[in-house]
Image (tube, rainbow, N blue to C red; front, top):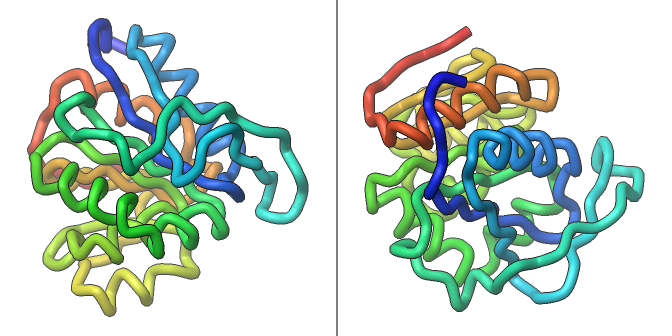
Length: 189
């Protein structure tokens, strides 16, 4: 990674059912680049992680409640997937408001796999080019997004990726974009 994240504070918004590797690997990459990460959730304590949505995969400690969080306190936002995690977030008014406000701030927001479900609920995907796990692409299209099948897509301040298979490209891209806060559109494959 050519750019550092020293001094950057990154929010990771997740709930029970988060796909472990989709939180763990990006967090590790961001912290190795010097960022401070904080897991925000809709409840305090710990959130339950999953592997392939079905198997228990330990827990993550919650650093703060999204209801108490302010977009101004963070430089970027990460939305990991798993099907249960974003399904819970998209019905929580505080989580949806936080995501909407973050996107509207112009700061970078990255979502992988099913993570874009929360972007849909926040009403921020219309006219944007995104990718996701195949099973939610129709939802994205119905919300007005242009959906492509690429490992990583950057459209302004939104960065999306398809699945854990794309984590190497996703981690490299978010580290670079979170460092530069670039708002240039790119489609990477």
